[in-house]
Image (cartoon, rainbow, N blue to C red; front, top):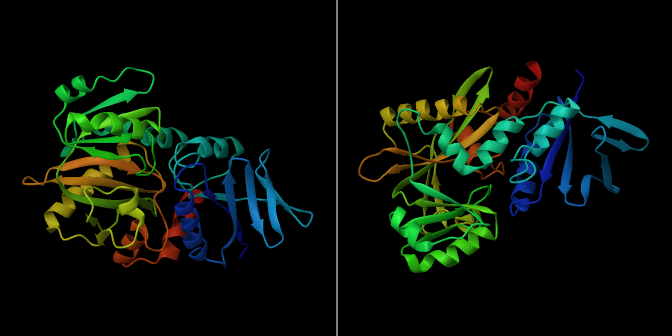
Length: 329
């Protein structure tokens, strides 16, 4: 059996660089060595490198190749696990489309759109059973009248970067006095921000992937945070949030969630694996969409690997099928 050369892309230019490195380590450990020769490639602002035993080797971006000991290595597949730019926002996907190299994520258009929370909400709003929080989008170049914001939306409010792939720059604000600082904090991360009504309820996250040609919804995870909301610290610091997989939900609710997230996946033309975050509104169990993450974390403790294990699936088979499913088509 001939092995395929897999370029495993990690790093990137966002605050989630370290998370991406951990994702790559776990994926590399769970790609079948009999089938795949894995080359981990780091994306940094000053270049793309393969970390060999002898040090860093530059990637030739003209044809996305690597020369080791005089041998030119070309890749059969790109496994992108870069969170934030340029792996989650469509830039790498566009590059690989031009190179004719298949990859594991959504295409360039879907990646770019889903990175923009406001655009994504507009596209999914009409899905039956799905609700979205009322919000305003602000651009850095405009004037921001906090009185107009306060009059338009009900407190408490969530202020977050519109294009952020991570939870950096988020704030929860209870009154008009807290708005200026929260707006400034979000604009430090992005030139567009979202001010959104806070939806009180239970927070959940669920992985969806196309496996063997069919959409597979993984077991749902409930996220119980000891902090007021699930920010970057709650997401990545041990002991701050508790994750329960599978979540304690009645079978009828799990079925309803599966229908909604499958429809989101189809509506947004998703490919590969994505993770959809949502809240069930307190007192009603209405499904409120938060966001779709097109390059979800893959470290051993991340939600998707947890959900794959809870589904009784093998992580090596799961990653292998993500690759083979694309190559077959």
